Image (cartoon, rainbow, N blue to C red; front, side, top):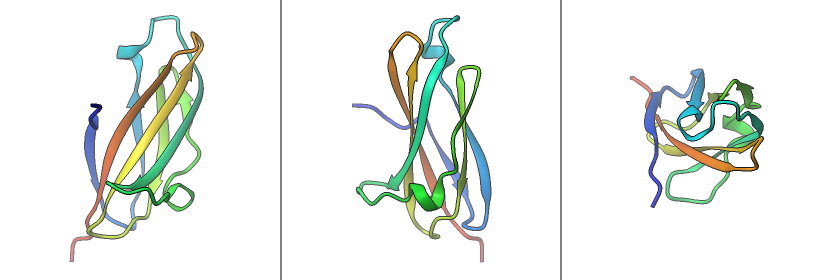
Length: 102
């Protein structure tokens, strides 16, 4: 069973770049051919990508995506998926915890 690479806590107003590094799973000369980031409710299937995830960009063997919005008190799963120049497919998940300080 796969697990999340970490948890990131943010407030609903914040828009932050979350970077996922795939270099530990890729060969040195291997590159990222394509990437996607999908945001769903943790433990559910509702897709929030259109309102919570920007367009991912690639820098070396990392993927950067602007994560924004969300509802305070909710947990989300940001799933970073890549296809490499060697036709390998990798996925890394980041748990997003939205918590507004009142």
